[in-house]
Length: 129
Image 1 (cartoon, rainbow, N blue to C red):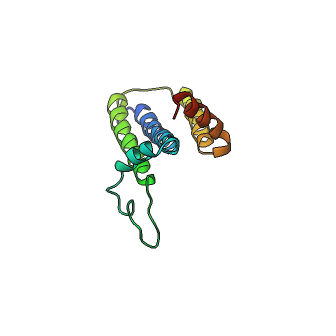
Image 2 (cartoon, rainbow, N blue to C red; image 1 turned 90 degrees about the vertical axis):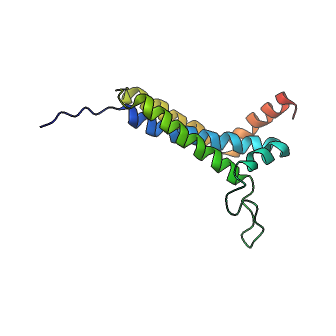
Image 3 (cartoon, rainbow, N blue to C red; image 1 turned 180 degrees about the vertical axis):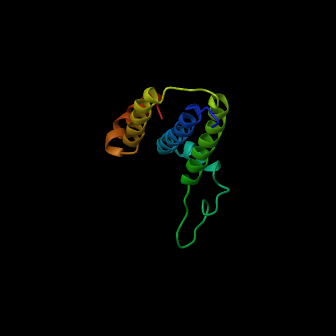
């Protein structure tokens, strides 16, 4: 029987990448709420997606298309980078699970407007936007 080593690095890369994609989606969502020029900038990344500029019966997805495009880009690039860096690494899954779970909780709370709006307001006031 062959003893083929199984490394945990690719597993951690495959779970870190979508987490970074979720954070990108959350940050771009709140950045687009801060100012119209930033919303237009974010929308420019997804203007190529069908329906992003539409005015049909379903309307337009607007800047959401840019948010999704950026999140997808971060997810795929980070997965490729981390996978190539960690494909032969045996990383601690036990140490990663609480970090991953905490990251999911934080990003989930970041999409709940009554929780995050005071933070966004504070950031907006600090930036003077």
